Amino acid sequence: MAQHPAHSQHQRHSGQPSPVAIQKALAGVDYPTTREHLAEVARSHHADREIVELLDNLPDQDYDSPAAVSKAISREQ
Image 1 (cartoon, rainbow, N blue to C red):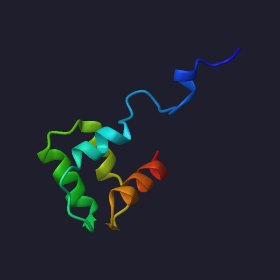
Image 2: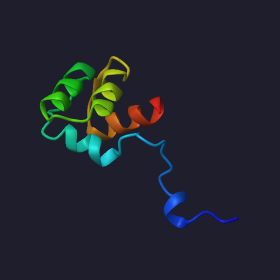
Image 3: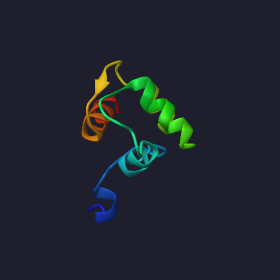
Image 4: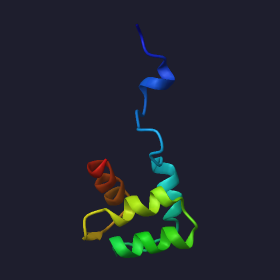
């Protein structure tokens, strides 16, 4: 049976934050930055708990761009 097109794209687990929601939570971040700073900014933007936890669980390193954050998140999921 064929999948509905809307279901075949962007298969994420339910409750998993979207990349757009994550980048919105990180609006205004100056790069490069640390994992701790990313989580701090998300908290200050009142991001969902899932986003803050996702950022808190990223590898402890410097992130030089939003793309680097997205790439690290995709590796963790």
